[in-house]
Image (cartoon, rainbow, N blue to C red; front, top):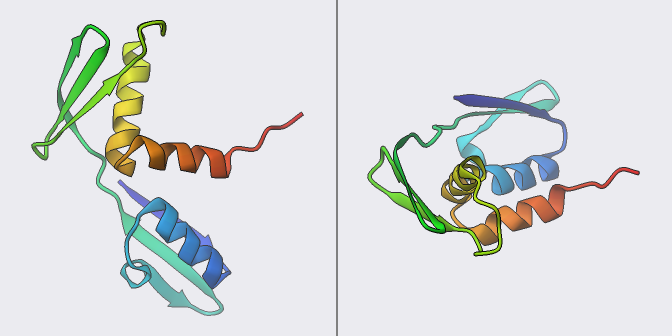
Amino acid sequence: MGGKINLDSTDLMTNAIDSWFGHPINDFMVKSDSSFTIQAVVDMPKPIKIIRSGIATIVFWADGTKTIVKRSADTQDDPYAAFCIALAKKVYKSNSAVKRIIDRNTVVQK
């Protein structure tokens, strides 16, 4: 999978790269006229096995790693939510990083 993002501000671009990919800016930057284009190929983690045991869901990935997520005992069992949380944790490396992204980017409309 890949992504292509057009940005006019270098500061915005630097922040976007740091937030989304965590890679050095030069890995993605292509100069064209007065704007920059960020091009990146993002490999989506591929699950090879999912084990559900009690309150835990364990996702084994094709790269040989695993991600474990646990729901609280009073939360309804939802295999879809468990997998989505495991995927977010795998991509962003921690629950804290996922929560920061949600907090920084959520806008409540009235």
